[in-house]
Image (cartoon, rainbow, N blue to C red; front, side, top):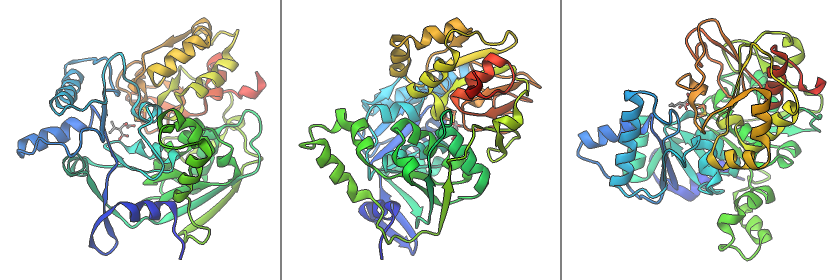
Length: 426
Ligand SMILES: CC(C)[C@H](C(=O)O)[C@@H](O)C(=O)O
Ligand code: SF4
């Protein structure tokens, strides 16, 4: 019987099977940020176990609120910083070098096909875009991961989602994933691995695949995996060029992680997305999804472009193409947070930052900040934000505030119009 990519990764990393169906896996990466890791660190310290399994496999960043906004966030940052220094964690990113974890770590080349990755963050599924098994975990698992480099998972049941057809101009990975979540629901993939397949995924850039995988958790998915191919090789090439004689050789090697033709899936879902239109959310759950056309005209107070979903250079390019030479509506506060310092610099050199600023946007340093309503753009009661992020829970960006999720193109058009708008009309 054939195996899925997740099953192959599990087999290759199996340390122990304490109960049937429960696999203890060796970890290639334990990623850390300043909101959840300090809790694990404090507990390890209290238990006299302030150790790390391998300081080269642990990567850490202060990203959620940075620079610190108050004493509490300053302490969270300090705890992570002191811990990273104490254990000589070389790949630790602080003010001036830091960015949103799920954009920064892939950009640094830390994620490879076939890897097992955990982090105390629900959007760890993003890294599945590289053909890795990447999952968000709670404090206890994070502690064990830090200490021993292992994590227990249940046998991976996989839902294969085939995305086929041709994406219409102005329709992006974000529209695809919003549509998929709208179709399968916020519990549609609970405790399941989603394997994204089909020509639409094959044709996507790594950035677009990360957008897709990023939101697997919004359908309950443990991980959202894309199969590694030449696009993966091209993205990783600066980091792997000494390991392979050629890109073709790397690509061939990555094929180890392809699901077998006769792999068994719990479910196979087919979506032809040729007729798909730009999508937007309307309620307080990510599966409350409608076509932008149906929501056009709904007023917004703020437009936020950034985050681990859509704060990458490709996203900023798309938004800038819509904004170029235009001004955002007077009543709209436009905020753009390039997800990493590299993205910020690239955007600067490409003239994208100029376009945003000339349009009336405020450009923040790379941080999660507004995405989870912690800094740099918290909403007031009753306010509405058009956002390129991944969560629209009630009060997510500020108590009493409402969030509409959308693509960077739709967000840019919405900023100009001051109401939800279709970028294809601009
Ligand atoms: C702070 C962190 C635990 C949280 C998560 O796990 O997702 C955050 O990144 C979010 O998006 O809400
Ligand atoms: S950008 Fe938003 S969703 Fe992503 S890790 Fe940060 S807070 Fe979580």
